[in-house]
Image 1 (cartoon, rainbow, N blue to C red):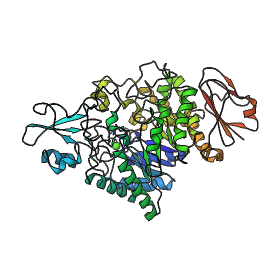
Image 2: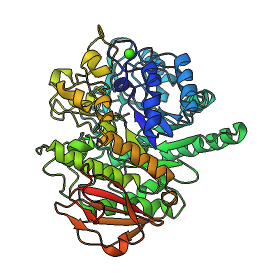
Image 3: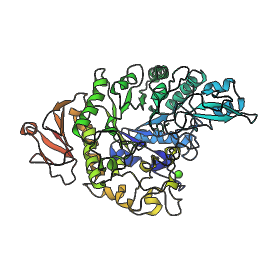
Image 4: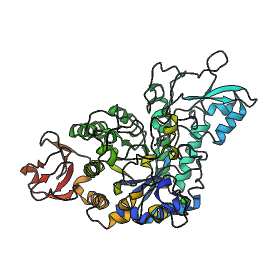
Length: 550
Ligand code: NOJ
Ligand code: CA
C-alpha cells in the first residue's frame, strides 16, 4: 500500500500553518502503523504555489516552505528504516511561468532559441490579437496567453493547457528531455524509489496546432493534445533510463503514470507496458457510481487491458484532485450511472448524507484493498474525512475556482490540513500550538472527533478498519496473485474470489444472505460494517463488504 501525502496539509513542524517535510518525518510511526510500504509525496519543489507545486521553478531542490534537501534526505533515510520507500511527483508537461527558462524566453523575444523550449506562436488577426488556435485550457479559459515583448509591445502567445501560470514545455527541444533525465537521476541518487508522473496524457501536441473546432467541456482537454503519440517518446526514454539506472545501481525504481483514461479503458495499455510505465492509476473507481454493475465494469475494463501482459494497476478511491469518497458516496445521486459529480472539477450538487457516505466508503475501501494490483490511499481517508464543502470563496486557492469564475468550487475541500488531536490547539495538532499561525486552509470546527487521536481510542473506527485491512491484505497469500474470478450471487451485488478467499460487496439498500456454498470452509476475516452484524450467519447488510477466507 502506498500512502499519498499532500505535503502542505499533512503536518506542520514549525507553526507557519503549512505542512512540511519535518512534519511528515515526525509522523512516520503513524504511517508505518497503517502498514504503508511507500509514501508518494505531492510536489515539494520550489514553486510559487499557484497550482500548489504543479508549477515548478526548480526541479532540483526543495521549496523552503517545506524544508531543505538535507531534511528531505533525512526523511528518505528515516522512512527506509521503517521499510517505507519514497516516491516523488514529476511534472513534465509544464513548468512554472516563474521558471528561469520561461523568464529567459520572455526576455529573449520572438524567434529566439529560448522560446523554442515552449510553444510560442504568433497570434491570428491583423495584429496578432487573436490566439493562434481555439484550444481551451483544462481549468478554463483559452489555452493561450499573450505576452508583452521586451520592447513593451503586445507580442506572441504561449500555450498552457492547464493555466497561464503553467506554460507547456516543448519536448522537441533537446534541453527539455535532457533536463528531466538529469532530474530523475538526481532524485534517484538521493534515495527516491520512483516517480508518479503528472498529466502524462497531455505531453504530445498535434503538429501544426490546428483548431479544435468545437467546445470542450470544462475539466477536459482537446483530443488534439490528449493521448498524442509524441508523448510516448518521452516515456520510452524514461523507461530506458530507469532500466539502465536499476541495472547499474542494483536498484528497483519505478515509474507510475497519472493518465485519466476513464472514458477509454483500452487507452491505459498505451502507457503501462514493458517499454513505458510500470504502473498507472486506475481512476475508473473514482468515477464509478455506487453500483455493482459500474464497479464490475470499472474493475474488468482495467484488468482486461493489463492482466494479459502480466501488468497491474494502482487502484485508488481518493486523491488531491477528486471529491473525498465519504462525500461522493453520501450524495443523493451516488448510485446514478453518469460521471457527473464523481470529480470535483465537475462536481455534483446533490445533497450529502455523510454518515451513509462514510459507511459506503468503508465498504468500498475493503473491496478495493482486495483487488489484484497495488493500492494508493490518500492521507485523511483513513480518518473518514469528508470533502469540506462550505469553505468561503475568499479562502479558496485552487486555480480551478478562479479560472471558472467561481462556478466550479475546485479542489481545496479535499486538501484541508489533517486533524491529529482531539484538542483544537494548533489546529488539532496539525501545527505545534500555541502561537502557531492559522492553517493555510481552515479546518471545520468539529474536526476533533475526526482526529487520529479520537479514532485511535475507538476500535470500531474507520482508522482501525484501514489498519486491519492493510495488515490482513499483506498476510493473506490468496490476495498476492493477479487472478480474480467473479461469482454471480444475485442482482446488484459484487462477489469475487482471489485464490481461496472470497470478497462480497453489497452496495444495495437491503441485507444479503451469502450463499452457503461460499461460506463453506471459510470464515469472515474482515467486515466493513462497524456494528459487525454480518458475521456468523453470513448476512451482509446494506453498503457493507466482507472478506471470507479459509
Ligand atoms: C494533475 C495533478 O494531480 C493536479 O493537481 C494538477 O493541477 C494538474 N495535474 C496539473 O499539473
Ligand atoms: Ca511548516
